[in-house]
Image (cartoon, rainbow over all chains, first blue to last red; front, side, top):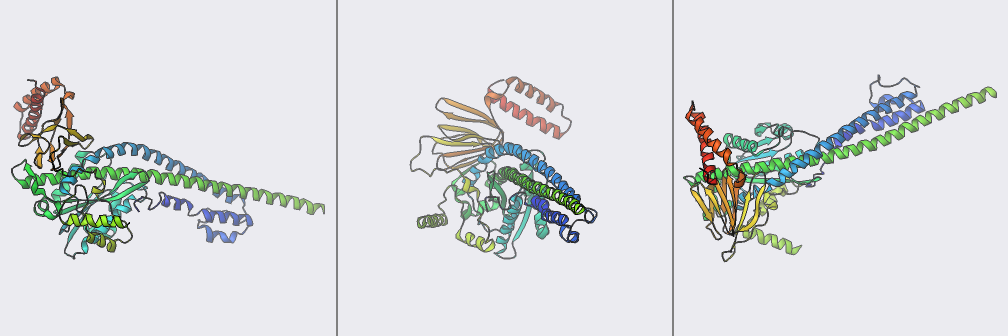
Length: 337
Length: 197
């Protein structure tokens, strides 16, 4: 799974493109054979697009139009690939630089994804734009799995989704609209920065009650592979009370504000903001990588299809010329005879 | 194969015994089994601790050097560097951290962070953040902004102090006054840090 090739990019586009090709091809053949009756059933085209029975060049016209549109789609996907590649370079550097940020917190507070709590927030990080392979459906699937995992312990658990990104929301609201506590969109309009992430974290903490937050995002591994990752963060109360999950926080002397509670609260909020910053960057990098490979695939698909269409077009043209020649020759022969 | 599963079993039993290993996800067997029933078709997700850089174990004797990690959102300022000691601006006052320091969690305030290694001293002005000192003589410092001291322009700071002092005196309401006060505090802390009057 983790390879991110869940749905090789551009399948949807390819379907759009391919959907009618076969019927075009068969209609072309039918046209040549003069079998006009088959047309309506195989092509799915409106009758306005179809040439009248016996008109041979019309099928060539349709294939030519199709070739033109494939060519322009190929141009678009190629351009999108270039854009994704240049964006990838910037965001990848940022993501790699931010990888140190969460490590001190994990070293101190531990990483306990199996923690059982009553109130949980599942923060799903997705992208705002589509056409980027399977990264959004991956995070949504894993978020749903985490949700169901909590349901195992009984129905009284309070679990809510917090969604970042348009695409994750579109998928999750189909079946769990009531469970969506918060939604943030258009987070990548300007490039992701720490201030923005800490404001979002602040907003989430302020308006939700929770014992633990689990953040689901795609960690960037390489352009073609990303890994769905779950980061677990505990509330200050839990950090204070539950030694089983956090290890020996008691061994640490705490310097800072007046009480230990205050320091732990600051610490837990800071951890959330830092983890979120890294998660957003990792996910944005995965998105760009996935989009790049998706668009590369569609460009390749389009050029394959263009080859096939060109071949069919030329073949049918050649066939009609041959037919015409035979007609002329046999006509002349008949006159002579 | 056998040795691996054995090692895994050993790892889980040690985590059950609360001997916390740095940077290891505490994924219980129950969690793995639950995950199998819930999502038989997906692999287990990764956990941040899978990507952690390895932390040294707690040594029996105090090591000669302190290992420092200093991270910012935008970069890895210092990565696992061996130094003599660091001085961090904790809210309770400047705090020196030497190897073998008692494990501590310290909140930081705006001030100077200095890293000392022999005669080599590197000074930063940090905005705020946290410092953790672990039992294995590793100090993690997380700050939001940090700038090396030599990158500040003394003239600009003097001008800033004057400007904000003026603003504070002419402030019309509390908000303006508070904003000006923050400006004065930061600039005078910088002034003090750079040793200019």
